[in-house]
Length: 362
Ligand code: ADP
Ligand code: GN1
Ligand code: MG
Image: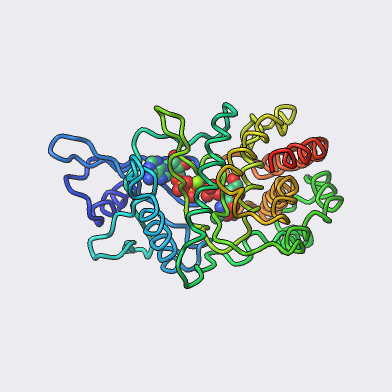
């Protein structure tokens, strides 16, 4: 069976009315495979999102789907009564057998979501209003999930943001040098070692465990096409116990620079202060009430920390021969690593001003 036929067959395994029409690859994620599937419902095309879960990375897809089911149900209950509540939370489409996922003949795990129409994800930020809206949506996401009833969510990837362990993985990749690339990344390896002290700070700061998203990349929130509002937080695979600052830090990492994550012209990669201000204001408008003093004190640091961690992860994957992130050209992971380290430097140059801003908002 061709890949297209397989996707069509899988799409028919979910509880969608109408005739399957077509499916096309969708989005620019690095981990899962996403398609937009179109069904003909009495002459009206209706879209849905179909995703094949990357089980090399998410080793327990059933536990992952249980997390997503609980999280989306809780959010939907909290948002019910809000205008347009059906577009504010991802809605899983059950498989025909009643489960939240489908396993195909090759053992791949699939899920489907209702398509959120009239909203878009952006790979690079275009305005401070977008930054504000994205951060507000992620802040609200954390706020609503603070009330998620027990039990604790599953850790879908253990130690996901454990930066010291990410650093150790880099050291192992350097030592193994399986792809023979150490010499090609000498400056980046040197940068990582020179900044190693960043790694343990958040873990040692006595910050509370919360339910967090852990992948708050700017393209993981849908902005309403008509109003620009931060409408719907997506990509819920890594929602699990974590630190609030992992989320804020990843927003700073992905939403303050005008350039894309794999930009090769590093002069374009910079932490734009007005974007940081918009993020801080948007996030604190929702999260300001529940964050502890220690969390607020580390907001600025979290951006540097997550950018550093991500650079370390891209570098380790480059040295290991590109086994984790999807790559589309030679040196892709090294290019991505460079943008992250450039961002660390850019934050370092502006840290004091950023700190003063955060203090003024509190
Ligand atoms: P990945 O884990 O690979 O990043 P995502 O879950 O972020 O996958 O989805 C990839 C892209 O698909 C998103 O950036 C977004 O553009 C789009 N998308 C995902 N879910 C929906 C949805 N329910 N409605 C509309 N678009 C969606
Ligand atoms: C991956 O799936 P996606 O593209 O949103 C990764 C994140 C990284 C990001 C870097 C499960 O996210 O942790 O920050 O790439 N997701 C996983 O772009 O590793
Ligand atoms: Mg994504």
